[in-house]
Image (cartoon, rainbow, N blue to C red):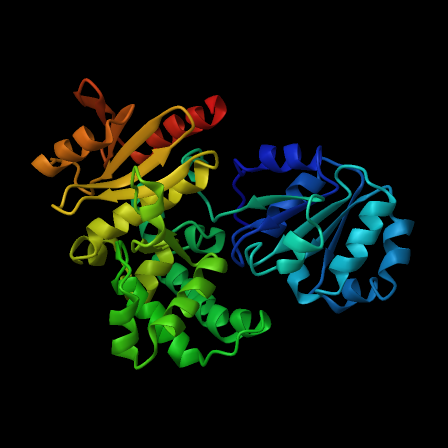
Length: 391
């Protein structure tokens, strides 16, 4: 098992000290079960049940009796979305004995898909999103390599594979299982070839403004159907949509977001980019770097609202973090010698951010101007981590 300590663990423990139940949500194979099992090693009263395992599922034939018999333990229920009837029982049990840290719920879909979590357990559950490895997690390991992380992405079994070929094989199987098993298990009846096609087309639009009508026309579907498919991929943590920044917040509701395949390794697998040399020669290299930067920062910046900025005349900023007391602007450049255009400075003039960062694969940070710094992604994550602590 390729284990890396997770930054989110402290936040999980904080939630366990407050809520009777904590839901850890994230895509399949991102490390939810491993995180809980490693936490379990530090505790005496953890009880882990995998609801895909028949023996574990059989223990819940009489769930109320089981929960009361083990009321002194923290009970972890893995893949809880497969047994939706449990939520009503959990609510009764929590209301009977409302103490922090009684249950940990693991699910491979967001709170909007596991509706019972947000409705039946409203006010009783803390919600934590877990991503695949972030760069500031793997950067602490002895074998860290930026090119490997960028190419393979952050899924533990992909990043930790013995070779690029083994990593490709794992990601190929992951995508196939996601399409053929995971989506149907959530109750969506979508033909596998159709879902694979829209996933592939979305990968080609990675880092671009969403044009649902264009995608719909090329697939012979309606725009609402395409948006529905994209929403499913977002709610299952495969895709991220980034809304535009406007000082007039009403405009954000009607303007198109940018879309990203959240994991760079999955993006490269869908586009058949198998080696780092393939990536260097592919036109999507810049958007791939941008997506990796956006995903890492947005995953870390839990206390910020995340946007991109683009004006009618073309001035653009890849990422804008809006905290309660400051605005941070971030531009992504895949070059080791990044340069910026006049539009970059005009975007800064409009946004008037507290500080601006250009995130590029450079060895060490350096200032570009008084309020603009060039840095690598690992250093940028340290900045975001400090912002989290201060917000």
